[in-house]
Length: 159
Ligand SMILES: [Zn+2]
Image (cartoon, rainbow, N blue to C red; front, side, top):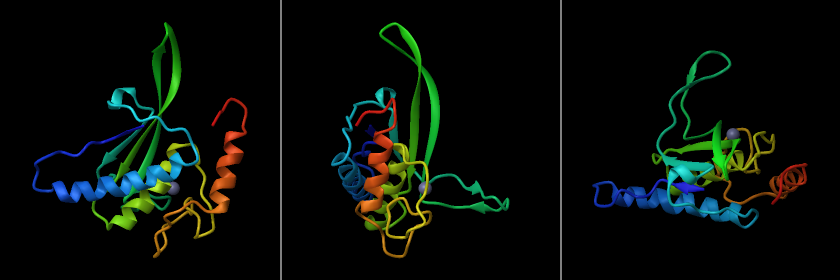
């Protein structure tokens, strides 16, 4: 896991620090459930989290929609101990243009996708709810945890 570092000394430094605190709180929530190893460079990471607004995306009706967060799953070929293999790489984009609680809730949700929960819940109290609610969800629900445990029991995965 790699998080875009703060750009020190810029006019927006305090704004960026606020973003980073919110993102790190969301990451800490997942770290309580999963072994997540921080790495120093984006090249080493399987999950990269960037401080930027996702580009507009066209919905099923063809209209362009804006969002504050997005997780994109890519596959890349990497060489490990002389062997080429395919590994997932997830690029997570979290916009800094929200309040701290909304940034934290967006990060929790998008990191859930990054850690393998690609589906959505129809229950508004879940981190993985299909659409954000007026009140940000800042903690995993019992249902989110149950889904994660189910995922970790699948063959080929380990916690
Ligand atoms: Zn989602």
